[in-house]
Length: 107
Length: 308
Image (cartoon, rainbow over all chains, first blue to last red; front, side, top):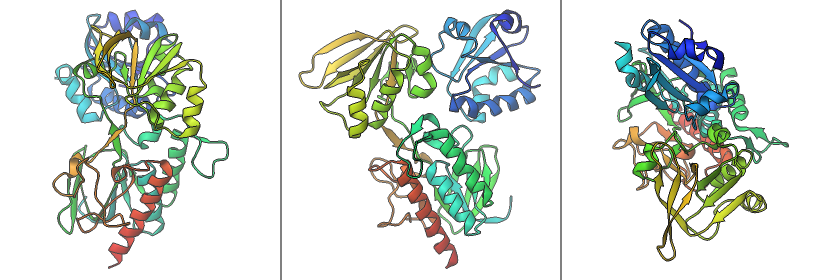
């Protein structure tokens, strides 16, 4: 399953009210490490899409949400369960390291 | 992959890509592991590079790396966007393992793994990383619009970051342990002329304060030891780099700071068939152009080695 884009308008339904865990990738076009980690998140989404939903939030376009969650570094990848942030991953990481961080959601 | 390659290049900054260009043109059929998230190296996190010869009007760091990458590809270098996670460089045939579990064997290896950001080494620096503490002004500066932030360091990267951050921040305070900058003159003067930049000399950061985000820094004078606190919402750490030599410790001779030791002016390491270039060997110059130059030398050294 490919990743999808979320906006302020869809954040509530797509993230906060989701019945499965959701990883929100806070990113922007101009951020090199964000572009590096993008394809890795696509792969994880393809492989584990039934366990975890991966969505992308562009911090340039949706800065209000980024500010609300106190994002000061991108990429930041926050996992939401039942509307709450349960895991925060900051910075681009290789796939094995990301999978390890997300381990508990992927079983 | 059971065949033995002529040369594997590990790392993909200006050194790695230049080595790939030369090795590919020498028809050595190189394979280059670019790194899964570090492809392009340190220049990927910079903005404008003004001093790379041949670019009259400057060039964006990521664009320069993209051009080098394409040039390597054009001559047939095989580019792999993955990490090398294990290396055995001691035998005649070198064995490397990548992050996906594949093994590649080679007669020669060019190490170009570069360097990583140095941390101050404070517990709270790590805890608040991503919550106000950052190592990448170009990535994170945007989130500090209208705020007062600190940059710690005194070299080119600190001054460049401080100058860049004034695009967003109301005030940038450059905190430096000494009473003058190590940065190049042109950059230092630019920063000194910038009304948004304030300098705090002879000062070191001894703690980062804040419950879940940076609120203040605890500072200490390097002259008389006086401690003070000052409110900041962000801390950018630019105190230099450490060589990424952790995978080769025990196999390749390193100096006491972890840089690879090469033989004389060559790129030859103590292991036959293993060459090193770029920031991994260089604690003096650390420029894109010197890294590219040493990448070229490494490819030529490897070519000569393979011919014998």
